[in-house]
Structure formats: C-alpha cells, structure tokens
Image (cartoon, rainbow, N blue to C red; front, side, top):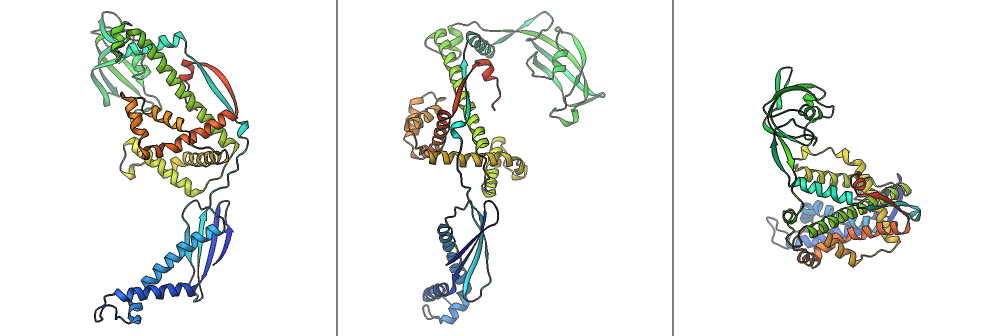
Length: 431
C-alpha cells in the first residue's frame, strides 16, 4: 500500500492510497466461489452453477462489496500509518481502474494540535459576596409580596397600588388587536404595562373615567404598533393597596416550614441566599476561565466539528422553544459563533485534562449528584438511586472532570477576591 499525504489547508489533508489489484481480484474470486455454492439460478441445480454464470449474475455486486471493504480498511490503516487524527468522515474519490492498481483519494480535516500556554497567568476575580441585614430584609419583603393580599381603598392611586380597569385602545379611531381589556388588574410601578400606560393610571380613583395617549416603543413585539401613539379610554373599577402579611410562625408555615417557626424560616432564607450566591459565583468564575482560556489559546477548529455543533445547538433551541417542524427552526447560521466557541473550549479543556493528568474525583461526583437532587423532598433516596445507576454516572462524569479542569486553572492561575454586596452581585448580568 502506497500512501501520500498533501496539506490543502491548515487542517485539511488530501490522502492518496494505492493498492495492488491482484489481492483484491483474488478476494472477488473467492467470494464468487462462496456465492456459487448457494446461488439459486433458474436452470441450474444449487452448487452446480457454472463460474461464468455466477460472475455474470453477481460479479458487479460482489466486486463493489469487496472494493468498499478494502477502501474502508485501507483508509483506516493509512491514517494510522501516517499518524493522522481525522476530525470527521472523509470525502472519497476513486480513480479509474487501470487493471494494475486500485487507488482512491480521501479528503478530510484533522484535529488541531493543542499546545496550551500561559495557564498560570490567567487572571480570575473571585466574588466575595457579603449578605447584610439589608439584603435579608429585601428578600423577606419580596417573599411577603408573594403572599400579599389586596385591599380596596377610597383614595387616588399611587405607585405600588393595584388598579382594576376596563380599557379600550385605538389607533386613529380604530380598535387594534389586544387593545381592549375588562376588569384588568395593573400593579403600578411593576413594569407590567408600558411606561406611558402606568403613568396615566397614577392619581385615579374608583368610578372615574380618563383618557391618555400611549407611545409604543421601537422594540415592541407587535410590528404594526412600533413607534405609534394610541388613544386609551379607561374606566376605573377600584384602587387597591397591597397588604403584606406579618412575619410570624404562620407566615413561615405558608412556605412549608412546619418546624422551628419563624426562626427556622429566617435560617432557611439566609442559607438559600448563600446557596444562590455560591452557584452564581461558581458560574461567574467558570465564564471568566472560559473567556481567558480562549483569549490566551486561540484555536482554529475543523469546520466538520463546527457544523456538527451548530446542528446540535439548533436542535437544543428547537426543544426549548417547543418547535418540531424543521422549517420553523431558528436559522442554522445564527449558531455559528456559539458553536465555534463551544468546540474550541471543549478541545482546550480536554487538553488541560490530558496535560494535568486529571482523573475523576469521586467526592465531586457525589457533590454533583447532590446538587442535581437538591430540589427533591426525599433528597437522600434520590442521591442513592442516581449513584447506583452506572449509565447516569457515566453521563455526568465528563461534566465533573471538565469542572475539575476549570478548578485547576482557578487554583493555579492569578486569582484575587473582589468584595461585592449580595444585591449588586445577584443583579449583575452573567458575563
């Protein structure tokens, strides 16, 4: 077998393989003899069909089968012989039969050679989140609002009140779709409605009728209304003030805290806030590592892997959106940048795992399972069930090892703490 390899791009290779035809013809002859022993052809007894007739009937099919097998086997042997690592399947072109050799050309991309650098120079900011009394108070207020009731009041509406109205909206005197509502509750200042609409409801009283204009913003979801002004006629049924429940054992019980009363509830609230901050800290640092890893180790990736990832991302998006019809799927090109990033990061992290000889940490495996089961009532039972499921554990192992690689970079890079309040940290968009 003669093999020549030509670089036709940074990662693309063109490999020509040439084999002597004699052994291939011998395989064809041998297989035709085997076929002849069992072939059923009209006019001949089984096993007595002349070789010439067998070749006429089955020769082309058998030859194609043999050539296909030889091609696959020789391709595999050739890439091994030349120390090539294909990123995907090859494009095969066979050459015309010259009677002496069988030759084909395989064009494919190879995996990039990853040589990591400057891992120890990667800078990471670790959020040092402080949960103060004000943060606890704000959280308790939010929880009380979830259980709030509304009490009708005889006064003008103010920010925070709920106003129950009938409304009719018109554009140039014509009613538009979605422009009418009956007994519709609007909480002022909640952002539930457009700013102009909520502003128009400030200072109204039950039984009043009023009119005002509302300008629709440029980014409004209904294209027919973008940038236009509508006239709204309002009939106010009632104005209601928010009534927050008292902080007591009964309130705690409304959140399924049946033992320990308000004291236990307050402890749970703080622990939940700490858990949320801890998870966001973990995600924030992970994103920092990913961005720095890409910046310090730029990598050209095979188009084959990129396109595979684009299709995977598109499929994930369809599942999230509940789209089943492929014709309604988000455009494939819109996933190009995300796919390129994910493939590059996957290759880089895989190399970190190899270079630093990272093996799965069983304690982290258990911690990951506990994290996934945190929402269940019978946590311990669920944890034990998943831990005893080899298939499930095999699925989460790559995620855990990848996190270990990220942890290695954090521990060995240039990490510094950054003090930040709980409110500021939790309201900061993910990077």
